[in-house]
Amino acid sequence: MPTGGKVGARARGLRDGTLFLMAETARKSEVARELLDCGRMFYMENDMANTNIDLNLADSIAMLEQILEVMPQDTEALKAVYGAYAKSGESERAFDYLKRLAEVASSLGDGVTLAFVRQEFPKFETTYPSEVAARLARLRALEVEAPAPRAADASDCEPTPKTTERDISEELALAWRLYEDNQLTQEEYSSVLHDLTEVSTNEVDVPVTVLHVLNDRGFTQMNRIMTYLSTRAGVPYLTLSNFELEERMAEALPMEFAGRDGALPFAFLGTDLLVGVLNPFNHDLVEMVESETGHRCHTYLIGPEDYDAALERLRNLNRAA
Image 1 (cartoon, rainbow, N blue to C red):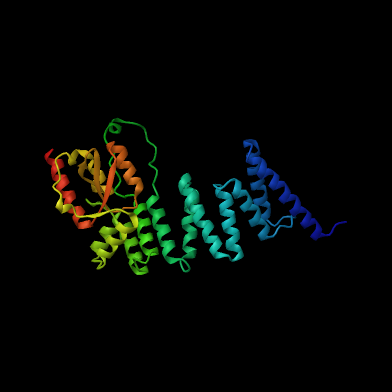
Image 2: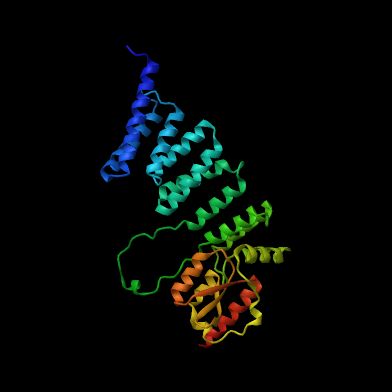
């Protein structure tokens, strides 16, 4: 009769071989993918319950990571790997998988998993204080509360007022870039995160940006930051006070792009549109402007005070139109 150790080894060998075949087949067959999903659930339930199959923590991690090679967006497997690494004391690997889980859950709109991630991130504040703060701030910014269903009535014909909370994910990413590249100290970075998240929930008539926050805080190295942004992003730094805004600028782009999103049209160059921006790394915004206007856009970095003055001039043109 085989000993317990041999039974465990045989079980592991059978498990690994079966899972490998299932994984290989799943790449070619949707039916097999369903089988793999069933296998994932079986092994996770039994591994974590310490059943008769002699599987240790390392075996469980290896098995789950093999599943993730085939099904990289499997949130249950990601959560299980995170838990396994946390249990084994490998905090760095656990944190990596928690970040990956957060990204997948965000892309899938998985509110339950996002709630789990928000609960887990504070456990790493001591080791990764700045990154945890950035991740939690980004999750708060992306959190959208679904409206309760109701019966349709005449009020449905009226425009729905927009929420005052703004999507500041690109600004949070910019703040993290500045911190990573030693343009901000940890204290400055934490202050910027605090102000961004706080101001984003208020009603303000200018974009909520890192540059505005730094300027309002009296940051003494604004010229250095502007030079860094211009050089790193490859976007020229420009002063809009040198430009007389033409009347057609008021109709070039909806005002919310300038007043809310940080993209201000100030001139045409042939058929191309010149646009002042406050975050030169926000490429999605440029694509939105080009899609909205039908014009190719050239972006220029603008300082916050200069931008606000030009925004007021643009609003005056819009009111006069």
